[in-house]
Image (cartoon, helix red, strand yellow):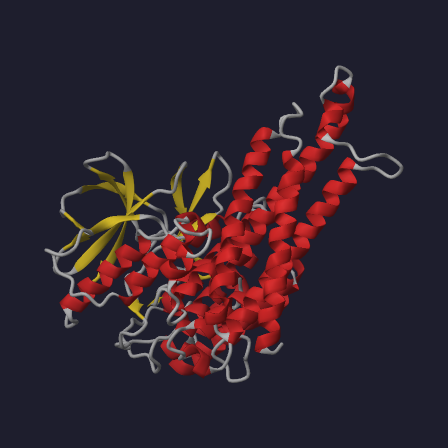
Length: 511
């Protein structure tokens, strides 16, 4: 669609979204006093719609400043919610007006003979409003919010100026956008006297027990007595110490500036620093305890683990990787050992949080091409990033490849690694024939053969259990660096200074 056409179309679509959303809330509002228990549900619906409304208003005001690709993508997103709002209005109309009957209004349920009429009708109306809340939640969480924070990458976009001219003034979303923009553009020199993120080294008492199959440790905050999670970031010998401390500072600020529920990163309290490493101190999510690693879940491989929980883990991981890249970091150590899952209210663990940034770096910091030669870590690395001296600089695509391996394991719901007695020495699972591939002596041929094996596993094993869309997503991640794969765009899109093109394509493909 031509740029002018998109601009006109989105204005119309945005207007329709606002009209149908407001109309829907107004209709439900008429039943507020009908004594059918709608008050709480209505407040939830209005809260959901308020956030959607201010974000749509914000998009209208920044539309002319967005790149063409971004405009096309957001137009598609708005079209989806518009159709959902129309469907919700239609469902409500069908509920309150059956064929051959006059429309039921709230006053019909307020008289002395109302109780019998209210009973059956209330159940149907509650189902309708619950469905509307669910649809708004899913659309916002899965489509709008992951793209929303990419607005920090748009050059020249004055978030505060636009917010001051619209109903989004003071809204949490635009404040978060502005905070992230300031963080990403900050080039200030960091030292102990200018930061508030480095805690006294004895501020946390480390527990003897840890998290199975993870390097993360647990501790107790001596001041608050809260249980916290410690994730160590090494400062390699021979590196620029001041630059490493500055990077860690920005990482802590990043973790403390975002919604942990939305992007899958634990809230960070600060860092414990010495000359060789920093321990990032993370809080547990609200109402969550008993952390477990994704590796532990895959090793246990329960056949009763719900499919929707596995899909939620996969989707959250994809979103976390995207957001990490949007904020100018690459992870470099993405594997199930570095994913911690929590459960709420006794349910199965389905809330993943990414840790293990011991080798992270800012995207604009030059790759040192340093690694190790451990096969069980190389399994999650692209062939060009394996061995002591990888042949390629680390890029965003390498994280996407690692994500593909993790998504494959989640789809199979089994770990590629198994352990006997020694937790430091895993072996490859026999049923996936990886042991035969890993026995190849030539390192480069071995690496590409393992990659070929993983793609074959995805194509043969996933469709029956996870569906074709999930399968194609995994294969796209595993082949994201292949010359013939254009699913994530051309190489120049990854090298785009703003990162917008690859971010949008990533959401379209994986999110």
